[in-house]
Image (cartoon, rainbow, N blue to C red; front, top):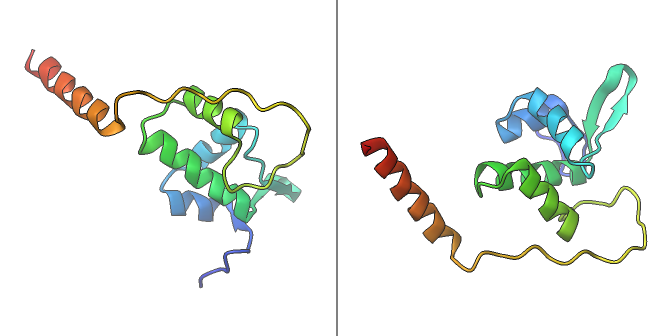
Length: 122
């Protein structure tokens, strides 16, 4: 049975959707303060739609785009959590954006692949 987009999700449902273990989601909660699912009795986690969106974004940045946890932390702190509802709104100046590489990401991936091939042949 499919849930509506506005329905809360359990940690198991989010874990299955993203293809990551539940302990990985719990680890992300410790590293990304923006990711705060509601916890009910027995510490059962319920992810709001904004939490699910943020978890998808974190997953994409870590596993597809090649960011480190620290890199994603900096990115989310600088740009805010995209498509997520802020837990608390505080009037503060926005930090300067993180510099983007001057070399396209695809080119960097190609270089990384060439280096891996050279090391393997090595």
